[in-house]
Image (cartoon, rainbow, N blue to C red; front, top):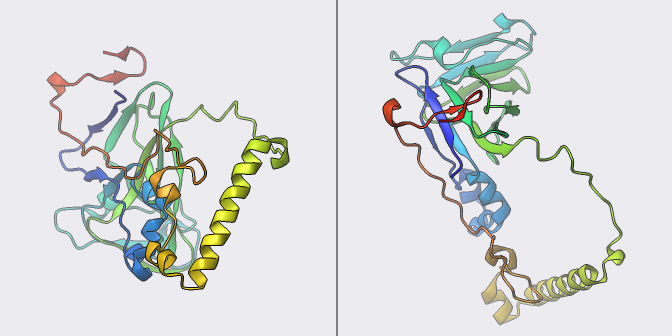
Length: 261
């Protein structure tokens, strides 16, 4: 079993929850059609969200100094600097994370904004953190896209973490090949294109059977439109585990120098 350990540094920390497939903007699309895009919904769930424990308001005046961002929070249980700080200047808002993460050898954490959840006026900055050896914490950073005021609400996710094999791509050499070089793939692609074009033509003509079907569900079912075979690794839904509290005397620690113990 792959392990992700979050060592809690302070008694009070931000909650960590599994990624949520739902998005308000997707709910508001006509007939909720955005959920028909399975790559979107799987990406939404491919990691864990770290939630802000109190509402934070930040305003940037456009300058490059640390003082050019003002940050406020009215929550009496949290000091503002525990929630967010101006640490780098240049319109960058920094969120401390009160965990030291440890992952298996070769596995890092990809820290970023929640996928497919844009926020007006500010953009998340991605980071790859080698949590298989790192002995200190990292921060989540957002960059203002224009001067102005933004609000992060209580329980809003400000960071999204996904374990990745951070060395997996170093030996990958992308290859560009004419599709005609693979007659089998070319044949399957043409058959798919023809079926798709035919379906859309019947849909535009209000064919009753096609209208009732509504849309082609090949990818949703993980099946080839030609052979009807299903990929056994296909994901149509992803539900990750809730973090669990573990007492230190029962924990199996991950240590970069000593391995699993």
